[in-house]
Image 1 (spheres, rainbow over the protein chains, first blue to last red):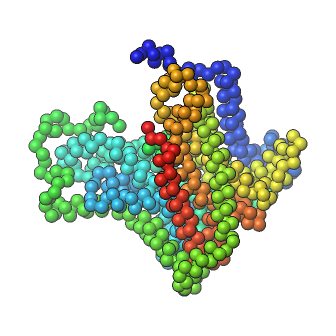
Image 2 (cartoon, each protein chain N blue to C red):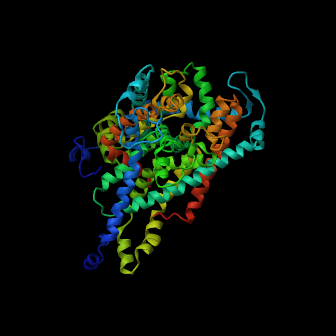
Image 3 (cartoon, one colour):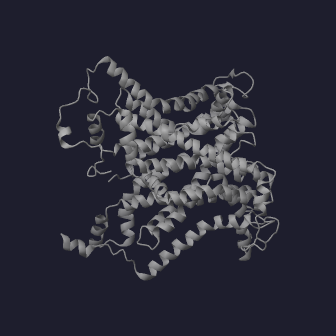
Length: 283
Length: 322
């Protein structure tokens, strides 16, 4: 009944005052979300912030002094490099381990595959805290405490990544690999030249999540990387806070440095990040 | 990915009609060599993930259960004590307290992010100018690390020089001591956490809202249902799978709350915001009670598992899958 549909077509145009109120709430809310970021930047360029009793929205004597203090006399540049290196390594490794495992679960039937996949998924539910003590002892036995490898090993494989990519591979039509098989392609060929190019959006989502997970991770690096030279940004920031209890400009400068790379990545790939999260909620 | 746009690798019709190749993909009765080759292929694809998961997740998980039955300070040899660690934890009033604080965190956090996220999702689901921009802004804190969030909020909520109390003073309100006050420490952590996760919840609920069939609303309007009625009778029930997901994830993460507590209060003042994971960390690395810490971590895991399973069973009562 097309006529009916036209009559009932969504009056999404809400009455005017309601629309104004709606915009107002959304905009004011957005400003409230942004304010802590703005305040972080403002504080970082206000020398002596935290010492005066009257914080000011407009810094009287803006300067980058806090950033200089941050990098002087402390291996802070090294800390930034540590974080970046570990995040890149984690991302590359997780892309490899997730894609190969996802291919096996999607395209290589074998006896007991369902059980193996269930075990993989179950590892997603195990909180890291349960593993802290034995992991610490294990890596100490291997002599890997205070090493980058020790920081990386527990996140070599990600059940989340495997699940995500397996879902994506499930969407790739089987006709494609069957046709390739007819052409004499083996699983290696199919994996590289059909599967990977066809799941690019999911790979992009995983890239961002893996990078973000590593860049922001705290508990495990806190446990395994005790040497100040090896520490990552979140650990160094937590330490900074203890060291400069009143020099909030320095602490906020460190926070700005920590936020910037994630912000850049987010702005570049916003679509994939939000899509990834949105999809995770729909069955 | 549509079948309508075949990549170059698709063979032409003649090839597809050609007789089956000698080595079909999977078939019983393949030669021994082919079977071995196939097994090796499976292993090649599976081992890069199976080895690390086994060595660094499954293995330690079982080891944690073993350690929980021992008295161990991470250095001296382990001494078997049976279930003593569990008995000791159950007898210790501190255990109940850390669980209580953790549950308190969840009780404060969940309604805040859910109701806030729902209102935002409903607002952004309207035809609104610059919707992508607003959504992007609300999501921004999600990509920020917990440590930064905790530190920034510690500064915002600084009792003497913080901007929040300064603003409150300007309107004549004497702001609380926030994270320095035992009564306000947990609320401070909750506020910071809700600010970070609001955008995450909003995006999930927004995706849920957008998957609701608009015909349902049209039909309801024809029947004369008002806006409130449509919200209660259509939107909320149809949104229940997304709500379920948010609640399950929030509870799993909520029980594991640590980073922001560590960086905002360290569990203080006076243990007022000590949560389970902070207790596990302190037991291991401060008090050298690794056995007890492992026991507590297994108790936490059991609680998370029980709560999650209970929700999966309970969902039949209220979650509607279209």
